[in-house]
Amino acid sequence: MYKIREMKNSDWNQIMEIYKMGIDNLISTFDNELPEFEKWDSAHVKICRLVIEENEKIIGWAALTPISAKKAYWGAAELSIYISDGYKSKGVGSMLLNALIEESEKNGFWSLQSIIFEENVPSIKLHEKFNFRKIGYREKIARDRFGNWHNVILMERRNNF
Image 1 (spheres, helix red, strand yellow):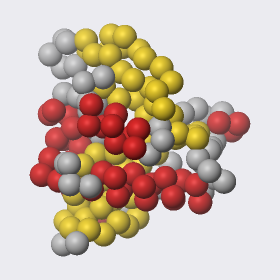
Image 2: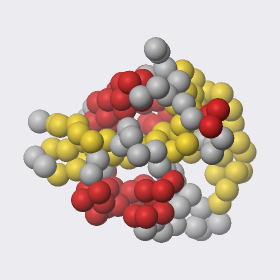
Image 3: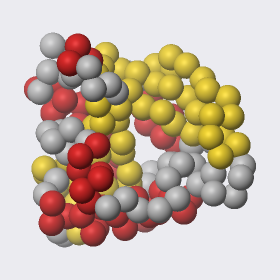
Image 4: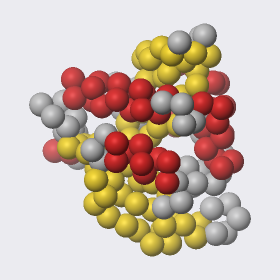
């Protein structure tokens, strides 16, 4: 049985194990190495950090990053969601994304945005399932660690209040 709860600092090692899977698959992040906790922590909103676990093992996580430091943009955030390889296509991402949307609405976020590799079709479909719409496309925006260019899709969901 799956359980969703707030992320704790003590979850860091398990969260980074899952993030490393995203680095390794080359279609989840342009990062080439794992960040230090302090850097990651300072870049992400302190609320709306969730993990999903099975038998007390974290199998996915989600968090928000502000899209701007300007106060007027406070309610708009970029979403990160990562699921452990062994749990993809099992409904885990849907459960976690639904919980994050609910938590973001409770905390006054009006816009959730995602930047998704064009090749990451399962992530695009997951976002579409929760009423994210494609709002943009960036061609050859960055290179992976092997020098290959990637395009990204910009998606947005307007929350209900």
